[in-house]
Every structure is written in C-alpha cells, then in structure tokens.
Length: 198
Image: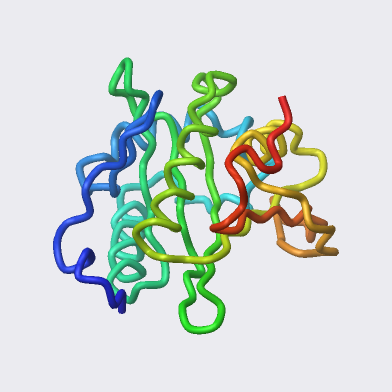
C-alpha cells in the first residue's frame, strides 16, 4: 500500500511538453486495441509473446483489473500516453516493481504505437514518470532494461538521463526467447542531463 496521502485520491494527469499521462480507463479499450493492433509487427520483437486473445475485450478487462490491483497494492502505476497536440492515445508506460524501505526503487517499462514513434513523445513520457517517481513517490532509483538491438529505446533512455550500468544475461523472455538486456538506471540526485546523449 502506498503510504503517501497522495494515493488516497485519484491520480492526476501528468503533463509534459509533448504528452499527457493518465491512468488507463475501461472505455479506452477501442483506441488501445486499434493502436496496438496496427502496431503489432512493430511491437512484437520487443515484448513478451502475444497471446491469441491479446486484443480481446475480455483480456482488456483483466488487464484493467490488474492495473487497479497493482495500484491499490502500491506495486505499480500504469499510465497511458496521449499526444498533447492531437489528444490521441500514443502508447503506455508503467512504473512497476515499486519497492520502499532500504531499496526505494522502481522499474520503467513502455511501448509506443508505430505511427507515433520518432516524435520525442516517449522521451517526454519517461522524463515525466521519472520526475513523478522521485518527487512524489520519493524513490531513490529507477531502472529500465532494453534489448541491445533496440536502438530507439536506448536513445530514449539516454536522452531521459538514464545511464547504462551493465548487461543482464538472459534477463527476460521476449517474443518467446530469453534475451540479454542492457540495464539502465537513473538516481534521484543525478545532475540534470546526466547520461544524456544528443
């Protein structure tokens, strides 16, 4: 359970330069399934293997239920990413594996629809979630992992101030295959721009 009074009321939207983040709602289903469906070939190489019912409404309800349960337990917060200029759903980002006590850390995972890639939306979203994690949740460290071939994701993390810390061998099962991942992290007291590569 989140100990902060902040979590006793609805989570407000987080507003960035290019995006607005808010928690997923049940009525986001059609837009979510459309963006995910049209981006399937773009997303599959970087995600766990899709189930046959991945985009079905029943699977969506279970997903929303899991988001709410994780939030209530204080272990994760899922956000949808909306492009500010159009108001369209562009992707999602989750701050998960949230730990307090001596760790005070969390892990970021994200996805973006193919037609929204390359616009700086995900970099903006990652920066917003990092600020929220440090300033509101008072976390000390945020981690993210990405496959070494995922050049776009590496660029997002480095532009958002994350630093590469090492290689995690056979770390996650992605698209049916155990894959190595680079570990990236950002610390609360890192100077602004740390890890940034232009």
